[in-house]
Length: 493
Image 1 (cartoon, helix red, strand yellow):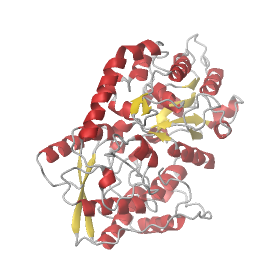
Image 2 (image 1 turned 60 degrees about the horizontal axis):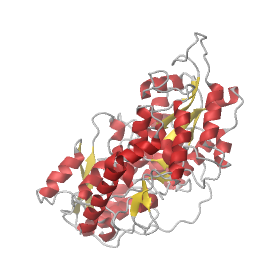
Image 3 (image 1 turned 60 degrees about the vertical axis):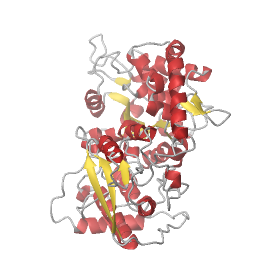
Image 4 (image 1 turned 30 degrees about the vertical axis):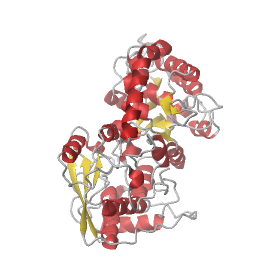
């Protein structure tokens, strides 16, 4: 899993912040909301905790005569917070993410004698495809969003990362759940880890209003999570206990009080949270559909009853449940729990009430662990094109960048930029540890073979409850598409 536990090097982070503060004589350039904030107003780093022993970081023992390592990364024209800021920084600006990246890269460039560079483009995957098909040896690494990257892999345009020199994918700075879940035909074309932050930002989570929990004398959600009692039934019971016609006009609207808002992607997040998958490995170790199993039907029935309840704020109840509308109701203290992605915390900085972060609920108390879906459509991925100009320097650079990110980028994002700037209680930090350690990547969800990955969301949108019939309608086509995809991957070199 990603090295996101709170045992990172606070001394190194404090030094980084000191350097950043010293370079703030000019106004910092505008950055994405997830990374830019006046550091002068940020709390001081917490006192260092006794560190657990971590394997020593050893950089590749080789130099490369100043060779350039060019990354192709994503620029999002709609929402800047989905733009990649984790690969390159021109210099110190006094902002946490930028300065962490610059500090990391400077050391790597010195020790490996390389130059890290990037090209940032809105149509990253198309540019990568065209470059490879034109047999151009321009990019060492391409980082489109995961869903688009998988298409490049299907076309045979990417290298199997397991063959890359210097990269040890079993190291803690590579996301082991990504390595396991994204492996197909025993090949790994996509991964992520401490080198990236958009996988954090696009993890599906729940936020809750602490004051409303107290006002309605409800159980502490943090304790429920720790005791494995944070379940779909518990969420429904708590939410329905809160929803009420606050203005007394005889109908429930955004002006009233709600226990839970159900975003369009909440049902599929609940499906994964309850431990279900679209595809998984069968007894023979082959990828096969698991959707449609008896348990998956039970999970769907329970989550859809929750989502369709007339006591939940959703498009099926008020007709006005888009992100902006729900964020406004949450900030005003009229909805207790919301179902968003972690990046949506940027829209909650105006909330007057204290709020916390929670994982998605379990199906029931017998479920062994929490599961939190990553919305991979906007997550940058690490991939190497088959036209990579030099795999030796590329593998060395990737391994070094991922490793040193555990001491620079991860602390800046996770321990300071997120925990101490937005969420001000230690318990939400504990929840983030659980959330990041139990994230889910699902190739069936990403590829959506035959509509299987979007089935839950489509049924919810059409207000259907017939999960079994919905799967039966698309099953043959989906299975044929999966079979064809597996044949294609197996044929790749």
